[in-house]
Image 1: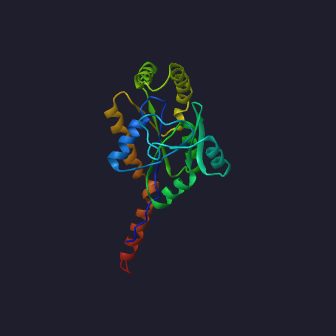
Image 2: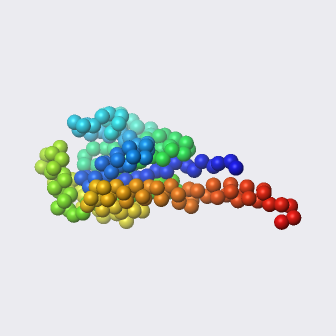
Image 3: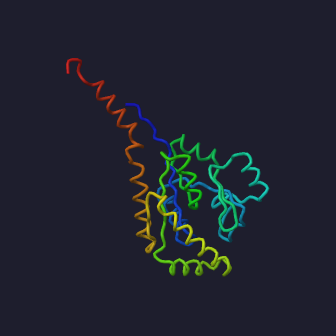
Length: 214
């Protein structure tokens, strides 16, 4: 029986800043050896971020040129900085049958779904409360107070888009949230639309094994 390789799965993880999507996404990637989509961004790297691993840090001029050249599958302005995903990288991922994780905001998730509705699964991470979200943002100690205030205001807008996602995971416990997200990913890989090629091949094989008089 010939095996039909299903297209790569685009697993999109979004959340308000501070809800834990990056921590959860990195854990999933490490646990299941998944490829991480590395976005381009115009913002400056944080102290613990590495160019090419966390993001590809570029200047505004380079980003403008990429937008003009139609190089992005999606791009958006988030907290005053721009983020974008290479369309070439996404298409290669799908065609090669390689699953890919996307740690992007709701604008990016919407564009991925619009372009690849059959190959994308969207998961939104919710904080247990706004008070806890604020506590986490302040505990990171990476942003100035005015930036934190802006992120909290933006979180209210981001939460309004939860209905655009297939799954919602409440991150009140990192381990529990991770297990839910992992289960969603595993189940998504076994969806009928992704395994139909296997079923069709089996039917063809079964038909070929029938005796002429059956």
